[in-house]
Length: 384
Image (tube, rainbow, N blue to C red; front, side, top):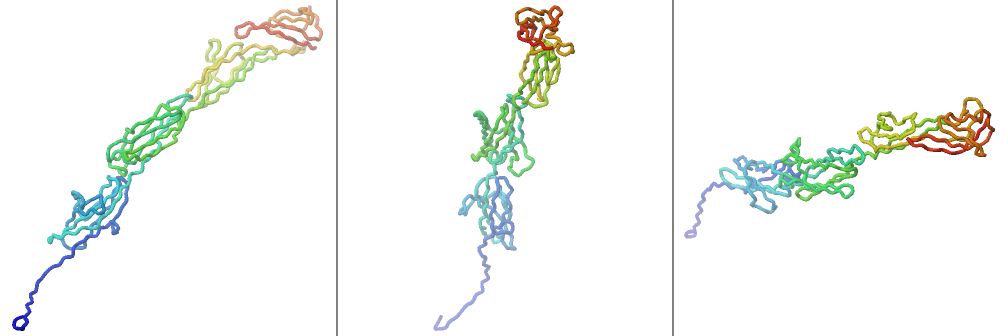
Protein backbone atom coordinates (compact mmCIF):
# COMPACT_ATOMS: atom_id res chain seq x y z
CA UNK A 1 0.00 0.00 0.00
CA UNK A 2 1.42 3.38 -1.08
CA UNK A 3 -0.33 6.56 -0.29
CA UNK A 4 -3.39 4.59 0.53
CA UNK A 5 -3.39 2.85 -2.81
CA UNK A 6 -3.24 -0.95 -3.02
CA UNK A 7 -1.45 -2.85 -5.75
CA UNK A 8 -1.55 -6.64 -6.26
CA UNK A 9 0.99 -8.69 -8.34
CA UNK A 10 -0.02 -12.14 -9.29
CA UNK A 11 2.57 -14.63 -10.55
CA UNK A 12 1.59 -18.06 -11.76
CA UNK A 13 3.76 -20.88 -10.41
CA UNK A 14 3.46 -24.36 -11.89
CA UNK A 15 4.18 -27.07 -9.30
CA UNK A 16 3.70 -30.86 -9.12
CA UNK A 17 2.75 -32.22 -5.71
CA UNK A 18 3.37 -35.93 -5.06
CA UNK A 19 1.61 -37.80 -2.31
CA UNK A 20 3.97 -39.76 -0.06
CA UNK A 21 3.66 -43.21 -1.65
CA UNK A 22 2.66 -46.18 0.57
CA UNK A 23 2.69 -49.37 -1.48
CA UNK A 24 0.18 -52.03 -0.45
CA UNK A 25 1.47 -55.44 0.59
CA UNK A 26 -0.49 -58.31 -0.92
CA UNK A 27 -0.51 -62.09 -0.67
CA UNK A 28 -2.04 -63.20 -3.92
CA UNK A 29 -4.98 -60.84 -4.29
CA UNK A 30 -5.48 -60.39 -0.55
CA UNK A 31 -4.10 -57.54 1.48
CA UNK A 32 -3.90 -59.89 4.47
CA UNK A 33 -0.24 -60.65 3.87
CA UNK A 34 0.35 -63.54 6.24
CA UNK A 35 1.32 -67.14 5.62
CA UNK A 36 2.22 -70.03 7.90
CA UNK A 37 4.30 -72.86 6.50
CA UNK A 38 6.32 -75.89 7.46
CA UNK A 39 10.06 -75.88 7.29
CA UNK A 40 11.23 -76.24 3.68
CA UNK A 41 7.73 -75.82 2.21
CA UNK A 42 7.79 -73.40 -0.79
CA UNK A 43 6.37 -70.01 0.20
CA UNK A 44 3.79 -68.07 -1.79
CA UNK A 45 4.81 -64.72 -3.29
CA UNK A 46 4.25 -61.45 -1.47
CA UNK A 47 3.52 -58.49 -3.80
CA UNK A 48 4.32 -54.80 -3.25
CA UNK A 49 1.55 -53.04 -5.18
CA UNK A 50 1.75 -49.36 -6.24
CA UNK A 51 -0.79 -48.10 -8.82
CA UNK A 52 1.47 -45.88 -10.85
CA UNK A 53 2.31 -45.54 -14.51
CA UNK A 54 5.73 -44.20 -13.64
CA UNK A 55 8.86 -46.28 -13.71
CA UNK A 56 9.26 -48.13 -10.42
CA UNK A 57 12.10 -50.03 -8.80
CA UNK A 58 11.87 -52.36 -5.80
CA UNK A 59 14.06 -53.48 -2.91
CA UNK A 60 12.94 -55.99 -0.31
CA UNK A 61 14.01 -56.11 3.33
CA UNK A 62 13.60 -58.68 6.05
CA UNK A 63 13.53 -58.52 9.84
CA UNK A 64 12.67 -60.66 12.83
CA UNK A 65 10.99 -57.71 14.62
CA UNK A 66 7.63 -56.30 13.74
CA UNK A 67 8.56 -52.73 14.70
CA UNK A 68 11.92 -52.72 12.92
CA UNK A 69 11.66 -50.08 10.17
CA UNK A 70 15.20 -50.58 8.88
CA UNK A 71 15.51 -54.32 8.38
CA UNK A 72 18.18 -56.16 6.45
CA UNK A 73 18.49 -55.68 2.72
CA UNK A 74 17.81 -58.89 0.81
CA UNK A 75 20.33 -59.13 -1.98
CA UNK A 76 18.75 -59.84 -5.34
CA UNK A 77 15.18 -59.23 -4.15
CA UNK A 78 14.43 -56.39 -6.60
CA UNK A 79 11.14 -57.46 -8.13
CA UNK A 80 7.63 -56.42 -7.16
CA UNK A 81 7.12 -59.96 -5.83
CA UNK A 82 9.14 -61.97 -3.35
CA UNK A 83 8.83 -65.53 -1.98
CA UNK A 84 10.93 -65.81 1.19
CA UNK A 85 12.95 -68.92 1.95
CA UNK A 86 11.51 -71.19 4.62
CA UNK A 87 14.67 -72.63 6.08
CA UNK A 88 14.57 -70.52 9.22
CA UNK A 89 12.15 -71.39 11.98
CA UNK A 90 9.95 -68.83 13.67
CA UNK A 91 8.32 -65.53 12.60
CA UNK A 92 9.84 -63.16 10.05
CA UNK A 93 8.63 -59.85 8.61
CA UNK A 94 9.19 -58.48 5.11
CA UNK A 95 8.64 -55.08 3.53
CA UNK A 96 9.48 -53.44 0.24
CA UNK A 97 10.82 -49.94 -0.55
CA UNK A 98 9.43 -48.70 -3.90
CA UNK A 99 11.21 -45.88 -5.76
CA UNK A 100 9.45 -43.74 -8.40
CA UNK A 101 11.58 -42.59 -11.31
CA UNK A 102 12.72 -40.13 -12.41
CA UNK A 103 11.55 -38.16 -9.41
CA UNK A 104 13.30 -40.44 -6.91
CA UNK A 105 10.42 -40.49 -4.47
CA UNK A 106 10.36 -43.55 -2.20
CA UNK A 107 7.59 -45.33 -0.36
CA UNK A 108 7.75 -48.20 2.15
CA UNK A 109 5.12 -50.87 2.09
CA UNK A 110 3.29 -52.31 5.03
CA UNK A 111 4.87 -55.44 6.49
CA UNK A 112 4.19 -58.99 5.43
CA UNK A 113 4.40 -61.72 8.05
CA UNK A 114 5.49 -65.33 7.66
CA UNK A 115 5.73 -68.05 10.29
CA UNK A 116 7.81 -71.21 9.67
CA UNK A 117 7.03 -74.23 11.85
CA UNK A 118 9.19 -77.30 12.34
CA UNK A 119 8.40 -80.28 10.14
CA UNK A 120 6.63 -82.93 12.23
CA UNK A 121 9.00 -85.69 13.30
CA UNK A 122 7.96 -89.17 12.20
CA UNK A 123 9.11 -92.69 12.95
CA UNK A 124 7.65 -95.39 10.70
CA UNK A 125 8.35 -99.10 10.53
CA UNK A 126 10.29 -100.30 7.50
CA UNK A 127 11.08 -103.98 8.21
CA UNK A 128 10.91 -106.56 11.02
CA UNK A 129 12.92 -109.78 10.77
CA UNK A 130 11.62 -112.40 13.20
CA UNK A 131 13.57 -115.21 14.79
CA UNK A 132 13.26 -118.50 12.94
CA UNK A 133 14.13 -120.91 15.74
CA UNK A 134 13.32 -121.10 19.43
CA UNK A 135 15.83 -119.30 21.65
CA UNK A 136 17.26 -117.45 18.64
CA UNK A 137 18.50 -113.87 19.10
CA UNK A 138 18.85 -112.80 15.49
CA UNK A 139 15.77 -110.58 15.14
CA UNK A 140 16.09 -107.22 13.41
CA UNK A 141 14.04 -104.01 13.23
CA UNK A 142 14.50 -101.25 10.63
CA UNK A 143 12.64 -97.94 10.93
CA UNK A 144 12.49 -94.75 8.88
CA UNK A 145 13.14 -91.50 10.78
CA UNK A 146 11.87 -88.47 8.88
CA UNK A 147 10.96 -84.83 9.43
CA UNK A 148 11.98 -82.57 12.27
CA UNK A 149 15.07 -80.41 11.92
CA UNK A 150 18.07 -82.71 11.90
CA UNK A 151 20.21 -81.90 8.86
CA UNK A 152 19.14 -78.84 6.98
CA UNK A 153 20.03 -76.30 9.66
CA UNK A 154 22.93 -77.68 11.65
CA UNK A 155 23.66 -80.97 9.86
CA UNK A 156 23.37 -82.94 13.07
CA UNK A 157 21.82 -86.41 12.94
CA UNK A 158 18.93 -87.60 15.02
CA UNK A 159 19.54 -88.86 18.51
CA UNK A 160 18.13 -92.38 18.82
CA UNK A 161 17.24 -94.40 21.92
CA UNK A 162 15.97 -97.98 21.65
CA UNK A 163 14.35 -99.80 24.57
CA UNK A 164 13.12 -103.36 24.83
CA UNK A 165 12.53 -106.37 27.07
CA UNK A 166 14.65 -107.28 30.09
CA UNK A 167 15.99 -103.73 30.47
CA UNK A 168 17.29 -103.48 26.89
CA UNK A 169 18.56 -99.92 26.14
CA UNK A 170 20.62 -98.79 23.15
CA UNK A 171 21.54 -95.16 22.43
CA UNK A 172 22.93 -94.12 19.05
CA UNK A 173 22.64 -91.68 16.15
CA UNK A 174 20.93 -92.34 12.85
CA UNK A 175 23.58 -92.40 10.11
CA UNK A 176 22.22 -94.33 7.18
CA UNK A 177 20.95 -91.52 4.95
CA UNK A 178 18.63 -92.20 2.01
CA UNK A 179 17.52 -89.94 -0.83
CA UNK A 180 13.86 -89.02 -1.03
CA UNK A 181 11.78 -89.20 -4.15
CA UNK A 182 10.51 -85.64 -3.68
CA UNK A 183 11.84 -82.31 -2.57
CA UNK A 184 9.11 -81.17 -0.26
CA UNK A 185 10.41 -81.87 3.25
CA UNK A 186 13.81 -80.20 3.23
CA UNK A 187 16.54 -79.03 0.88
CA UNK A 188 18.67 -82.05 1.73
CA UNK A 189 15.74 -84.16 0.49
CA UNK A 190 16.69 -87.10 2.67
CA UNK A 191 15.50 -89.36 5.42
CA UNK A 192 17.36 -91.76 7.65
CA UNK A 193 17.03 -95.48 8.27
CA UNK A 194 17.94 -96.84 11.66
CA UNK A 195 18.14 -100.48 12.66
CA UNK A 196 18.92 -102.78 15.57
CA UNK A 197 19.73 -106.47 15.29
CA UNK A 198 20.59 -109.51 17.38
CA UNK A 199 17.20 -109.27 19.07
CA UNK A 200 15.41 -111.79 21.25
CA UNK A 201 11.64 -112.02 21.24
CA UNK A 202 9.76 -109.06 22.68
CA UNK A 203 8.42 -105.54 22.16
CA UNK A 204 10.83 -102.78 21.19
CA UNK A 205 10.41 -98.98 21.10
CA UNK A 206 12.41 -96.20 19.46
CA UNK A 207 12.59 -92.55 20.54
CA UNK A 208 14.03 -90.13 17.96
CA UNK A 209 15.04 -86.59 18.95
CA UNK A 210 15.90 -83.83 16.47
CA UNK A 211 18.19 -80.80 16.90
CA UNK A 212 15.38 -78.79 18.52
CA UNK A 213 15.01 -81.53 21.15
CA UNK A 214 11.63 -82.47 19.76
CA UNK A 215 11.04 -86.19 20.29
CA UNK A 216 8.74 -88.83 18.93
CA UNK A 217 8.37 -92.46 20.03
CA UNK A 218 7.53 -95.35 17.74
CA UNK A 219 6.44 -98.85 18.68
CA UNK A 220 5.83 -101.34 19.98
CA UNK A 221 7.61 -103.28 17.26
CA UNK A 222 7.24 -106.95 18.17
CA UNK A 223 9.93 -109.50 17.31
CA UNK A 224 8.46 -112.99 17.40
CA UNK A 225 10.22 -116.26 18.19
CA UNK A 226 8.63 -119.71 17.75
CA UNK A 227 7.88 -121.68 20.88
CA UNK A 228 10.39 -124.32 21.87
CA UNK A 229 9.85 -127.61 20.07
CA UNK A 230 8.43 -130.11 22.53
CA UNK A 231 7.83 -133.82 22.09
CA UNK A 232 5.27 -136.05 23.78
CA UNK A 233 5.08 -139.78 23.18
CA UNK A 234 2.78 -142.76 23.48
CA UNK A 235 4.66 -146.04 23.95
CA UNK A 236 3.43 -149.60 23.61
CA UNK A 237 5.78 -152.14 25.12
CA UNK A 238 6.20 -155.67 23.75
CA UNK A 239 3.76 -158.10 25.30
CA UNK A 240 3.98 -161.48 23.62
CA UNK A 241 1.14 -163.11 25.47
CA UNK A 242 -1.12 -160.34 24.16
CA UNK A 243 0.52 -160.50 20.73
CA UNK A 244 1.43 -156.84 21.16
CA UNK A 245 4.43 -155.44 19.27
CA UNK A 246 6.58 -152.51 20.37
CA UNK A 247 5.46 -149.10 19.11
CA UNK A 248 6.41 -145.45 19.69
CA UNK A 249 4.22 -142.58 18.50
CA UNK A 250 5.43 -139.01 19.06
CA UNK A 251 3.67 -135.65 18.76
CA UNK A 252 5.62 -132.42 18.20
CA UNK A 253 4.47 -128.93 19.18
CA UNK A 254 6.12 -125.51 18.95
CA UNK A 255 8.55 -124.43 16.26
CA UNK A 256 7.14 -124.06 12.76
CA UNK A 257 5.24 -127.03 11.31
CA UNK A 258 5.44 -129.28 9.38
CA UNK A 259 7.94 -131.49 11.19
CA UNK A 260 10.47 -134.05 10.00
CA UNK A 261 11.27 -137.08 12.20
CA UNK A 262 14.55 -139.01 12.14
CA UNK A 263 14.76 -142.23 14.16
CA UNK A 264 17.85 -144.19 15.20
CA UNK A 265 18.35 -147.26 17.39
CA UNK A 266 21.36 -149.36 18.44
CA UNK A 267 23.62 -147.52 16.00
CA UNK A 268 21.13 -147.95 13.20
CA UNK A 269 20.16 -144.75 11.39
CA UNK A 270 17.28 -143.64 9.18
CA UNK A 271 14.84 -146.17 10.57
CA UNK A 272 11.85 -144.08 9.55
CA UNK A 273 10.79 -140.49 8.94
CA UNK A 274 7.28 -140.63 10.35
CA UNK A 275 5.92 -139.75 13.76
CA UNK A 276 5.11 -143.38 14.55
CA UNK A 277 7.40 -146.42 14.32
CA UNK A 278 6.08 -149.96 14.83
CA UNK A 279 7.13 -153.60 15.10
CA UNK A 280 9.94 -152.67 17.45
CA UNK A 281 12.32 -155.06 19.15
CA UNK A 282 13.53 -154.35 22.68
CA UNK A 283 16.02 -151.51 22.78
CA UNK A 284 16.52 -147.76 23.01
CA UNK A 285 15.16 -145.58 20.23
CA UNK A 286 16.12 -141.96 19.59
CA UNK A 287 14.14 -139.39 17.63
CA UNK A 288 15.36 -136.07 16.30
CA UNK A 289 12.62 -133.61 15.27
CA UNK A 290 13.28 -130.79 12.78
CA UNK A 291 10.72 -128.12 11.95
CA UNK A 292 10.06 -126.33 8.65
CA UNK A 293 12.74 -123.72 9.40
CA UNK A 294 15.39 -126.37 10.01
CA UNK A 295 15.25 -125.89 13.78
CA UNK A 296 15.95 -129.01 15.80
CA UNK A 297 14.55 -130.24 19.09
CA UNK A 298 16.78 -131.98 21.58
CA UNK A 299 17.20 -135.66 20.83
CA UNK A 300 14.69 -137.69 22.81
CA UNK A 301 15.25 -141.32 23.83
CA UNK A 302 12.63 -143.99 24.44
CA UNK A 303 12.99 -147.54 25.77
CA UNK A 304 11.08 -150.56 24.46
CA UNK A 305 10.91 -153.60 26.79
CA UNK A 306 9.26 -156.97 26.76
CA UNK A 307 6.57 -157.01 29.38
CA UNK A 308 4.63 -159.85 30.99
CA UNK A 309 1.05 -158.93 31.72
CA UNK A 310 -0.56 -162.26 32.53
CA UNK A 311 -3.67 -163.28 34.44
CA UNK A 312 -5.00 -166.48 32.85
CA UNK A 313 -4.47 -168.87 29.99
CA UNK A 314 -6.85 -171.44 28.52
CA UNK A 315 -5.19 -174.56 27.11
CA UNK A 316 -8.41 -176.03 25.67
CA UNK A 317 -7.16 -176.71 22.16
CA UNK A 318 -9.08 -173.91 20.47
CA UNK A 319 -5.86 -172.32 19.21
CA UNK A 320 -6.33 -169.15 21.31
CA UNK A 321 -4.19 -168.60 24.39
CA UNK A 322 -3.36 -172.32 24.57
CA UNK A 323 0.31 -171.81 25.46
CA UNK A 324 1.73 -169.79 28.34
CA UNK A 325 4.80 -167.62 27.56
CA UNK A 326 6.48 -168.95 24.47
CA UNK A 327 10.08 -167.96 23.75
CA UNK A 328 10.85 -167.25 27.39
CA UNK A 329 12.88 -169.37 29.75
CA UNK A 330 10.07 -170.37 32.07
CA UNK A 331 9.55 -172.29 35.30
CA UNK A 332 6.03 -173.11 36.60
CA UNK A 333 5.24 -174.34 40.13
CA UNK A 334 2.18 -175.66 41.91
CA UNK A 335 0.94 -174.22 45.16
CA UNK A 336 3.06 -176.89 46.91
CA UNK A 337 6.23 -175.77 45.11
CA UNK A 338 6.36 -178.74 42.73
CA UNK A 339 7.82 -177.72 39.38
CA UNK A 340 5.50 -178.77 36.58
CA UNK A 341 7.25 -177.08 33.64
CA UNK A 342 10.72 -175.80 32.71
CA UNK A 343 11.74 -174.73 29.19
CA UNK A 344 11.44 -172.12 26.44
CA UNK A 345 8.61 -173.50 24.26
CA UNK A 346 5.85 -172.33 26.62
CA UNK A 347 3.69 -174.35 29.05
CA UNK A 348 0.69 -176.12 27.55
CA UNK A 349 -0.99 -176.82 30.90
CA UNK A 350 0.23 -180.41 31.29
CA UNK A 351 2.62 -182.27 33.54
CA UNK A 352 4.06 -185.57 32.36
CA UNK A 353 1.68 -185.30 29.41
CA UNK A 354 -1.34 -185.15 31.73
CA UNK A 355 -3.62 -182.09 31.92
CA UNK A 356 -3.26 -180.12 35.11
CA UNK A 357 -6.26 -179.08 37.14
CA UNK A 358 -7.78 -175.64 36.96
CA UNK A 359 -5.83 -173.71 39.55
CA UNK A 360 -3.45 -170.82 40.12
CA UNK A 361 0.28 -171.51 39.51
CA UNK A 362 3.42 -169.60 40.36
CA UNK A 363 5.95 -168.84 37.60
CA UNK A 364 9.43 -167.41 37.07
CA UNK A 365 10.25 -166.05 33.60
CA UNK A 366 13.65 -164.92 32.39
CA UNK A 367 13.87 -162.58 29.40
CA UNK A 368 16.16 -160.07 27.74
CA UNK A 369 15.30 -156.39 27.76
CA UNK A 370 17.54 -153.71 26.22
CA UNK A 371 20.57 -156.01 26.31
CA UNK A 372 19.95 -156.89 29.97
CA UNK A 373 18.66 -160.11 31.55
CA UNK A 374 15.55 -159.54 33.64
CA UNK A 375 13.25 -161.79 35.68
CA UNK A 376 9.52 -161.68 36.05
CA UNK A 377 7.65 -163.56 38.74
CA UNK A 378 3.94 -163.87 39.28
CA UNK A 379 0.83 -166.03 39.22
CA UNK A 380 -1.21 -167.37 36.34
CA UNK A 381 -4.58 -169.08 36.50
CA UNK A 382 -5.22 -172.11 34.31
CA UNK A 383 -8.81 -172.31 33.05
CA UNK A 384 -10.03 -174.95 30.63
